[in-house]
Length: 436
Image 1 (cartoon, rainbow, N blue to C red):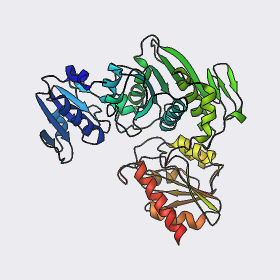
Image 2 (tube, rainbow, N blue to C red; image 1 turned 90 degrees about the vertical axis):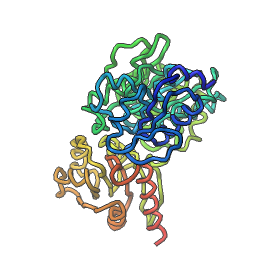
Image 3 (cartoon, one colour; image 1 turned 120 degrees about the vertical axis):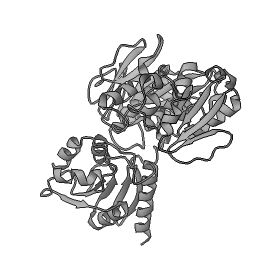
Image 4 (cartoon, rainbow, N blue to C red; image 1 turned 180 degrees about the vertical axis):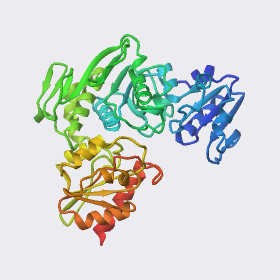
């Protein structure tokens, strides 16, 4: 796709790039290629190194950026209620630009949990069918980074976070909304605002679009076709972790050969099959390719077996529901490590689950882990506070007889750059045990 198609959005305008991470750097590369802005600025809380642009760095970066004609937001920048409606109208994201222009067919996947695995599965299925496809978005490739490689034959599978969808006014051709749980509430005024961001994945579809939406979510009115999906309930797509029913067609569990751990991942497989089929893939070819799908790092990842004890890295887990699913997916554990950045999300479901005695040893990390300690019944199981992850792994090694699972049910920020860094540290610590 010719990048000059983007010119009308920037011609003669003063553009401020908000946040200078990977997506911000892609914005700058695009604007320099277009060479049509009256001014380009980079606004970031931290000092940045960018040549040939106006730098707006420091605590007042957002106030200075809002004076520009167009604000190019990066997903990690918290807007919340810091801008007026008029100022928010200036915001343009890479997701919105991609969805507005639709240089190729787009499958958009979002949800509180499972979106990376499901996006990767869809991409895997399309590749197995010999289709021209790419995997972009929240998976680590900014939506416009591969814009010039797209053609009318391409199917772009785009993993979409709530932050990427927050200001979207267009939706993908095929939209997937896997689930919605309380998450990222520090970025939003409340749960409903977070949920509304997620709903943008389907809300602006035109006729001819298809939306696969979790059956527990009551969708708002939209123009596309609705397909419901359910784990353990009723829907057009449904599974309880065994057979899959795909819009009337039953796929027996013996046909579903996968390395993915946990029954909840069969739900992700089912949704991925429908999305891939809607894009033109043959379901039988998809199923044939499923055993070759290895899963993703930091998602129920087996790290090592030391002295008969298995260590599992589920650093991607940032909500209570996912921690419960992790314990059940691996067949139970005798040590669970939880805790991280405290965003004041409710932990009632997790504490109620742990208070049944489902896990013999619960090791708690600051800050959220320490907060929930008072809600745990330490007469039924051992509750131990660790000062950091290194301390937690040592404590786990001394207590485990079967399996240790890191499934924090909390974000990593404030302690690590992201969940990947946390997961890699956990694996390094486990390898140190292995070498002792």
